Image (cartoon, rainbow, N blue to C red):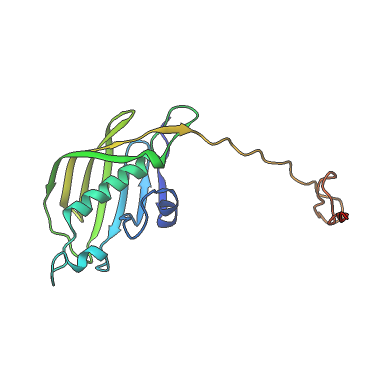
Length: 191
């Protein structure tokens, strides 16, 4: 059964992604089992805009391609349905190549980039996506194929939740289970 779409704020993206600021180019995202979409606002404060270009800041096309790769990584971590009892390891995802990349529009500070990726082929150890960056309805970057390598690790064991404390008759207060001490225990000092 397909996973429902998850909306991910920057805090969640930063918590799961192996890529971190100042090189993370996703401000928010939505991920399902069939696609991922994200937004990135070019602020003008990005470190690479200081010299790209002198007195004419332009978002490098290679950085927009990087942003699409990052969205593909997020898809693998949050949208891909892995083998049973397995998860995709963030430490095992790497860029391997891209094909059919075309730049259609210059992007500048103030532009809101809308990114999208869709998986084309998924066969361990390779995942191939198609991707696009748009500003409004205008194409900025199109990538026919972005290929990443990835791997699985065993899924972490689900934590066992202890039984809840029982409410007492006295005003619904909660008492700890009988096997737990209610006061700190003194430890005898050794001589």
